[in-house]
Image (cartoon, rainbow, N blue to C red; front, side):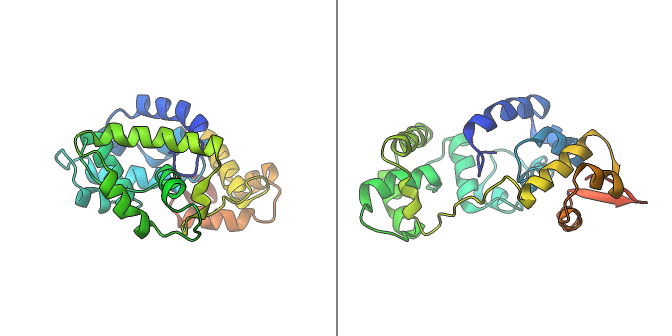
Length: 224
């Protein structure tokens, strides 16, 4: 949920989501439409679909899940998989995300730009607290936030940094509007067009259907 979404928006949605889906088995047994409805308001709804698919894949996988188990799930890369293993099982693994980049770029790459993660990883490996990796990463997250608020976002010097596009008036906003309306009830194309009079609606519907987030049956459009 925190990928590309502010923590202040995530916190209430996370608490609500965990209450509805307290275990991977519960999430796996829930229809995608129910998962998307619970996710509504966070955006980037493919994340919800990938999470749902991962739950179905992992629900019968014995604990502790391994890096290989997690990376085998669509939408889960090596950094996310390592972070899960660190936070869930306190395993001393190396991963990089925006706050990690912020801290290490601030201290070791102040006069550089286009810094690749491959340059940062060896430093993280050396600095990692192998006895208390979970707490070390917690502290690193807090320190990264502190640097951003006092010095600035040094992660902009990363080769992997991408500025988020404007949401207002974007296709992402239309996608969110469509999914919110469908979360209330199924709609026809004409009904959606009445609420969303935008010429890009048709292209958005095609994208959502291709992504597996909506289905169209006999002219009726619904979630999942």
